[in-house]
Image (cartoon, rainbow, N blue to C red; front, side, top):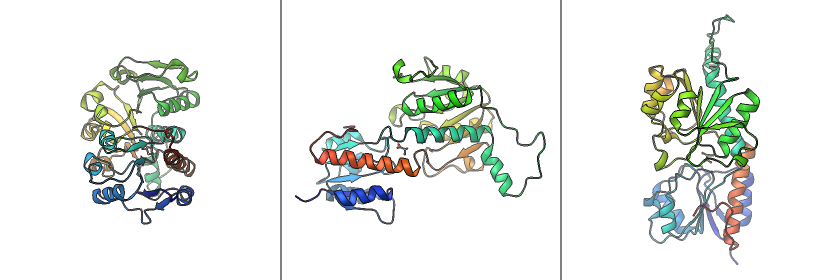
Length: 323
Ligand code: DGY
């Protein structure tokens, strides 16, 4: 029997590409270019499985292409707001993602951003590299202490809980959270975390607000002018979730007016484009969507896609089936 035809939209971890080449009739994206609408449609028309990443927009337009041959979208990433799930379903596609395997890695990066922005690390590094450092002095580049402060989480899923464990156990932080679908107490694994009844309750108390809600229509611009006004003066915002959860213009205003003290961002409203104003601010730490970017995690994510696609073609329900 011939192997299913699989098209991969970007370069993946080499071990995963090798596994895909071995198991399927695989077409890789050798030059790692970002595929256009027409290329994605062509992929859907010519393969049994298309393996996108979170940077490929599988919109209703893409998924509305004529004569779609593909039966599964094995997406490489946990977030799925880049895929119009209704349109995928209407096109007869099964969609899978890669939960769990990137939880710790992304939590590590949220803590990295929190520490960097509080301790002015990006600014300090730029200062040293520019050869502007004249030596130690008591008032030089004073940041904000992290230990013992309050961390407020918006969304309390797996990644938020992993961030909380690091913050509470490593830095003695007090944990508060708001989630419209809160975890069961047993999912907190002994973590001492106080559930708030609204995001405003979190904003009013948190020294650091970390976002862990999914992207999509429900959370679009959740953090806008009103949210910033509700935050404690001098609070910091950390975003490793999705860029458009934060209204970038409102964030810039809140930073400019000093309403909040700083922000640590891994994701952006119009990613990969970032507003010049943010690029010029010293009190923001800007990373290029690196949440899951370790060798180990990217391999595990890719292998999870392989597992899902293999299960699908073996006639089983993939373990990470979304629709
Ligand atoms: C995801 O998986 O959703 C991240 O944003 C990329 O790792």
